[in-house]
Amino acid sequence: MRLSVLIPVYNERDTIEQLLRRVQETPQDTEIVVVDDFSTDGTRELLPPLEREGLIDALVLQPKNMGKGAAIRAAARAATGDAAVVQDADLEYDPAEYGRLLAPIEQGIADAVYGSRFMGGSAHRVVYFWHYVGNKFLTLLSNATTNLNLTDMETCYKVLRKEVWDSIEIEENRFGMEPEITAKLAYGGWRVYEVGISYSGRTYAEGKKINWKDGISAIRCILKYGIWRRIFPRKPKR
Image (cartoon, rainbow, N blue to C red; front, side):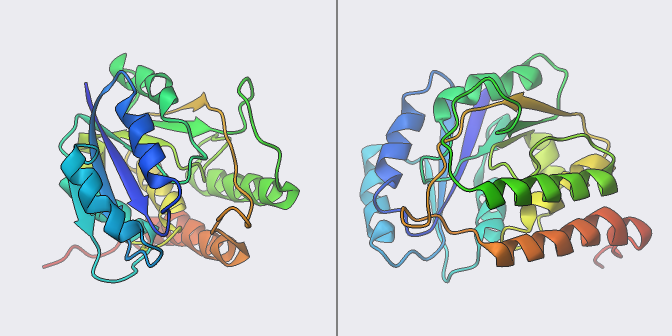
């Protein structure tokens, strides 16, 4: 099974090359798709040489800063693998765990697999208590609207079969795409699994970008895609 690795990048000059080499070292047959979201710290200039070196299979340079959701949308369009995983460029998530994530799909029992930071059994860096509380609250609220029993809705590691990616139109441009994808998986009737993963969280001093405003946006998206769109489906485009 060929795995497309969708990597949205914004101002990750210090980690992007190391992340790409980690992905290359995995035993899976991977296709690396990088979307730079108009980085301003020198990341954008690093990427073409890394592509020429063979560390990137497809490179998309956004014309302006558009957000993670827009970057994932562009990456998914460029992907050709049998399945695709979202991979942040900040080294919080370990590509060595791709095999664990892919297993339920390869066994034919799952259409989508979430890597849960909260299932236990793997190493976790201890960082922010209120981030943990926020993540658990958002997951609970999402579960209440989708009737799924996820432990980590906001995880970066979401692996979907290509057919599933193609069926989902990502409308949100920023971090709201996490609850959006989850709701669309639930109401699409796709089989969703979770597996435990390790997590090496960053501090804000180390470049962590998500904040309380993204939490408010996530609540809006949970209600929009989990309830409102179910009651009032969007009219098809003519």
